[in-house]
Length: 69
Image (cartoon, rainbow, N blue to C red; front, side):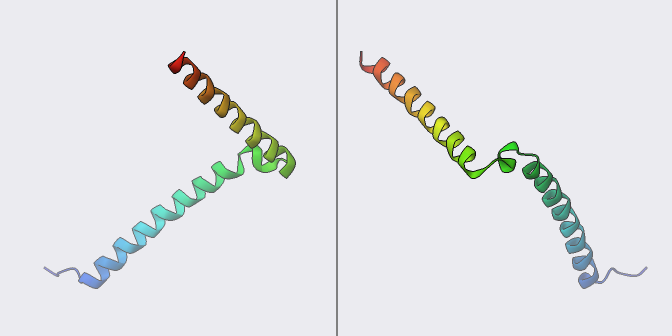
């Protein structure tokens, strides 16, 4: 019965981990590339962020107003 070389075992484990990471990164890139905002002009992106910020600010203000009145 031969024993498994610890260095070979560690290398195989590392190879498996790298393989999993490559798949995860590939899936992550696909998700990022599918994001519609990445296909927009910078001014449109700025506008969308601005609108989302304003909406959040209004919700916060309404919550605050409701808490004190």
